[in-house]
Length: 253
Ligand code: G3P
Ligand code: CA
Image 1: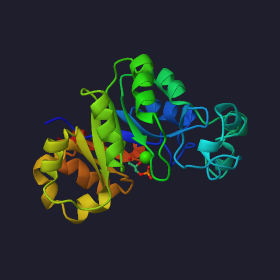
Image 2: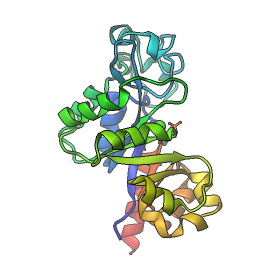
Image 3: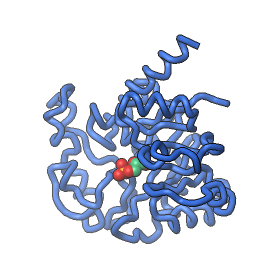
């Protein structure tokens, strides 16, 4: 069985601005096996990489993404809010913008890593988002392994309908009965399960660890537990730390 992969959550979000080119580049430099990111859609139909439905928390702009054009969103800094971070560098961080998915895909071209795109459909239905995503990945994905995940099941099922070869994963923050039945019936590539759900009762998931990615595991003991279980991947805000724990274990095997 292959070793547990380490995915950088929103890049390397404990140390660099989340969902930015800077953060993704840093995660790659740390040696991650994959990165996770979140997508929303602008008023003019562009796919942008940002966690929230609004600009407010992570940038110096305000308002809903769905009400702004890409040009409007690009005026704001996606790094300025992180001046409390230890590595904050005024010159380079303030000029960070909310990236488009295309920009992230282009940044990743030289690197052989997996990509988890989370479709954020918590508040709004972004018409045509799934088609757009598949087309961007087709053009700029460089053949990499891409997993489309969402809490919103219809959205990933739509992806599968559009492309039977697409890898889809359902995000879970609650227990479900007979998870393997969901995987089989819905043709899921994996389940993305919250660490609390998985670690409080690992029994229902026991035979399926190779099809389970766990989010968001940051605590040392939890990361070690998940490495022991040999889950498919750990999605973490501290990829460097998780990679270190994994290499430490290898040294003692
Ligand atoms: O994909 C796992 C995780 O990112 C889901 O939660 O809120 O961090 O997007 P959130
Ligand atoms: Ca996410």
